[in-house]
Length: 233
Length: 123
Image 1 (spheres, each protein chain N blue to C red):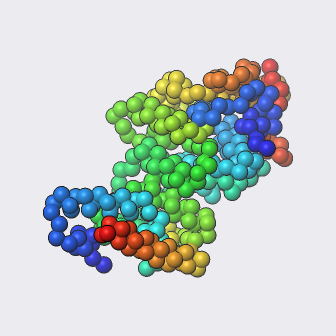
Image 2 (image 1 turned 120 degrees about the vertical axis):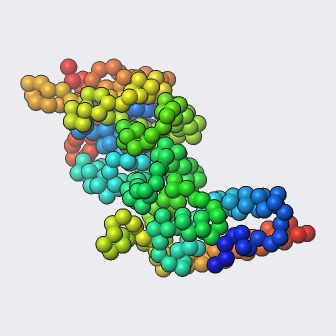
Image 3 (image 1 turned 60 degrees about the horizontal axis):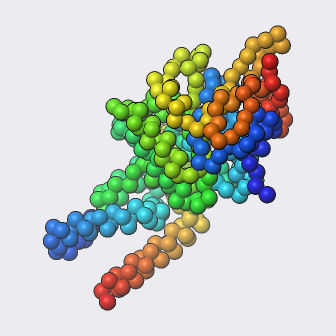
């Protein structure tokens, strides 16, 4: 029996009533430490394990080993069908050359798709890193084409983006609005400080063609990985 | 090893251009075989592989098409990767015993396939 994406995280079906439509491009935004990578990686790992399909997680922020150590600390295991691609070797070996990372990422996707017929999921961690090391005169067009290509490929994509509220890096995406217009869905992760201390939350701001809750729900990490609890208000 | 241009017999300019396009397409489509074939001779990093195929065949395999092949072959246990001593900038790949066996078989099968295609064209 196939596992829908909305059932890949314990409690996600409390806020996502219909499944994420196939071929959607979903933005996962939030400040640092809000579990963006963990949420996406966990959804992908559980989905590929249950559905005997493949997923590709491209990380520009970390190398494979440090990403896996991070996931392991959250109780999230990598599955055989989930492939991780990092740019460490490429960037070190081609240090003196200018790499077009948007074009290269597209080629990486095509290479994995060629290898694995049933590649159904893709994630990029993160869009901010892609922007910071890509220089294009017409970046908006590049983003538009990148999103269009992802949609045309037919697999469901998760694009991780550190939000403008980033308290540590202070970096803002110049193209922040563009991504939100182009994406089919936006999932926001954040932290709220209250009497009981700091709590993590998840909120679905937009999900085309799918019914969803609007409230912020608490996000926790337990022995079995990530859990979504009730509304946080 | 001769370069691809040295291997091309006397052809007119139009044929040389088309020959280059065909070679380009064949290598790009079958890059896994060419990468494994190159690694039969010596251990190399992604950068070395791209430069070698460029210098011998005049075909540029872009980074986004080579590194995924190296990573998937490594994941399948056909390649072994290690950083060069004193140089963390380049990760050298070599064939594992099972990778060597498959590479030799694939190179032979690929050469046979090209022969068959060549015979088909000469009918």
